[in-house]
Image (cartoon, rainbow, N blue to C red):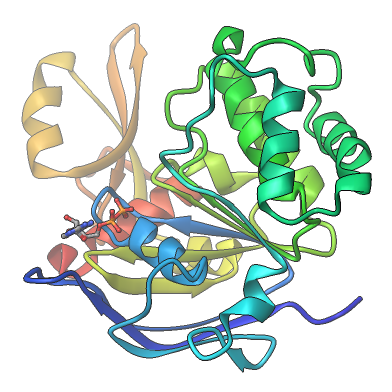
Amino acid sequence: MSARTLELDSVSFRYRGGQLALSDLTLSLRTGIVGLLGPNGAGKSTLMRILATLSKPSSGTVRWNGDDVVAKPDALRRTLGYLPQDFGVYPALTAREFLAYLAAVKSVPSARIAARVAQCLDQVGLAEAADRRLGDFSGGMRQRVGIAQALLNDPALLIVDEPTVGLDPEERMRFRHLISDLAADRLVILSTHIVSDVEASATSLAVMAKGRLLYAGDPEVLMAQAAGRVWEWTVPSGRVPELRRTLVTSGSTRLADGVRLRVIADAKPSDDASASPPGLEDAYLWLLHRDGGQ
Ligand code: ADP
């Protein structure tokens, strides 16, 4: 297996006339699924566009297998698959026609296009639907076409930006399985603001907020850091609105005698609250709100 290493060193990015959208990011990514987590506005799409060589950092460097991607973008582009957030399809074309067109745009040799398109459609579970018009596809099927186009050049680096937005729960689950299946021998970077999108599959995590990197590493290590800060507390339902305003909560369950809240706090919120082991969602919220969210 060849190396797949993406290294960011002090990467910053400022939109013209805007604030810093990325602030001094240093990060090293290797083969596997990297979950890039952060709330809206964190800078995820900005970072993805830089990694996909569509924009250049204002300062700092990005290296793919050691090569600077600004000086030598072609080495990365040849082996990049990218599913942008605003991926659109031509509704009048069939999935097969659309992918054949994109394969030609991506310089797949014409003699190989038909076989490669069939292979990619099969990989995303759309072989049966290959000759249906894209206008008749569900949101989840369209996203799978998006992945199929990103796979046309058998990329070593696959970047997918908020791929589950607008999908229903079943499509979302199916999409997560698909991404897991694709990770062997690739570096997959998946951005999302939804923890459960990456919970089962990410081999490493990068958490961002307001353009800064808050955490990079194993999900387990992040969960261990939040240990002792997650509480379960059953309260009368009338108190829930007030408590939600003043506390960080990661979940609630309605019970016969009230509501059980999951509370993220450094200290026990009440004598009758009990400690609970952190899940990834708890740890993520703890990280976002640590030090008052600064
Ligand atoms: P995310 O993908 O995490 O939601 P973005 O990368 O889209 O975050 O945005 C990061 C920050 O950059 C936000 O403050 C956003 O308002 C700003 N931003 C994004 N795109 C532009 C743009 N084209 N021009 C100016 N500011 C932008």
